[in-house]
Structures are given as structure tokens and as C-alpha cells.
Length: 183
Image (cartoon, rainbow, N blue to C red):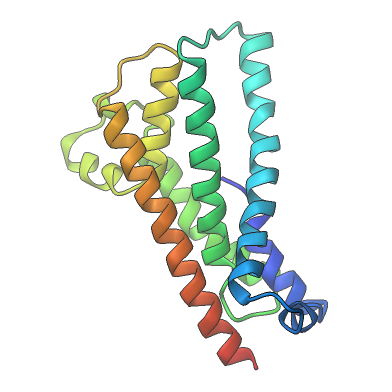
């Protein structure tokens, strides 16, 4: 998950450039989408590091490269939208937003199947795992490297698209309310 998305808006507020952005002939929605794209590009570049290490150093074999690429693009955009949602906190201190961001990201990491496949997850924890968008990303990535997924690929893609749209919608609303509170 990208770390730059939640950092952008509070940093802009702290540096007093957020007001300048709001006075330009673009809508707040365009500013939010710009933040999402910045988080997307940053997340995509950062995601290439473990991929290259896995393939070049450890010899990992991509069984479904097209599935891998579409999963990466969709999930990085989804989590960039989540980062934009978290950045809507009406503060000019990036540390406040990063604390909230870590409060969300760390539990998602531990329940998502990163460390233990969902097929081996105890049933009492599986429900929480299925609420995490990262679980669907991990399932698709495991499948792209040849492991059998617990969930179907179509279901995982649909859930990721749902979360992406939900995070974008909530981000738009949260940023609008944040601007009203700040100004």
C-alpha cells in the first residue's frame, strides 16, 4: 500500500499551497484524482522492487503474467484511493494522517493472507479477512504465481473494483467536508 497518498493533502495544507490548489479552475474532485494518481504511480514503482527481487533473485515464475499486471494496476489504484480517503482528515500535520493510515494498514496486512494463505486461515478469522481488500489482491497475486486461490478470480476482481469505487466515492465526500471545516 502506498505511503505517499495520505501524506499529500496534509503536506499541501501545512505548506499553504492547498488554498492555491482550491483557487485554480479545477474542481476539488480533480485535485483528489490527482492525489490518487500520484499515489498510484508511487505505489506502482515501489511495487516493482519486490517483484524484481522475487523474479531475478529468488527465481519466482509468473504463471499468469496478464493476470498479475491487471491485479497490480487495479489494486495499486484501489489502495491509492484509500490513501486519498485517509488524507481527507482536516489537519495540516502529515504525522496525524500517517498515524491513522498505519492504524488502518497494519491490521489489514495481518488479516489479509500475506503471511498465511486464506485457505489455512482459521474460520473465525476468515470473515475478517474477507472484509479486507488486500485479501483479494493477495489471492489474485498468489494465483498469478501458480497457487490455487480460495476465492475465484472473477469474485476477487469484482470486490477490488467495488472497494476502489467505494474509496473514491468516500474520498470525494470526505475531502468536500474537510474543505468546509478548514475554510
